[in-house]
Picture 1: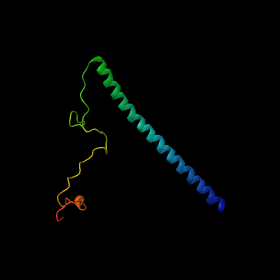
Picture 2: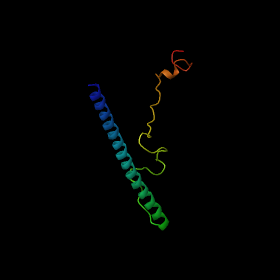
Picture 3: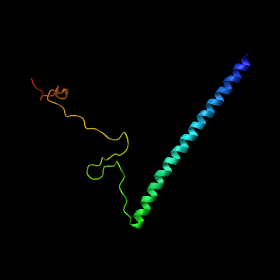
Picture 4: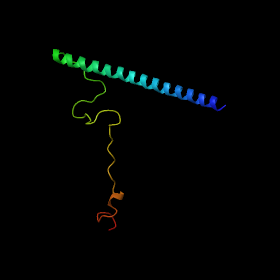
Length: 99
């Protein structure tokens, strides 16, 4: 009985490891395809610049003075609201009302 349970555990472990390896392989393959598409776009844009052909700017990007300094998802920050007169910022300073 112990041998059957041990064998089943080893088979389950092998299946788990093979599934994980296959998942990592497919993920790496998809990332490679994504990066090669981006590389193709950059090389095409570079070639067009060398030839003097103007291309359209990337869609979704803000250009000019309003462009954010940090691009990418999760890199867009929102400014916090200014402190009001009843803020806790001035509790211990002499600027607060009632002092």
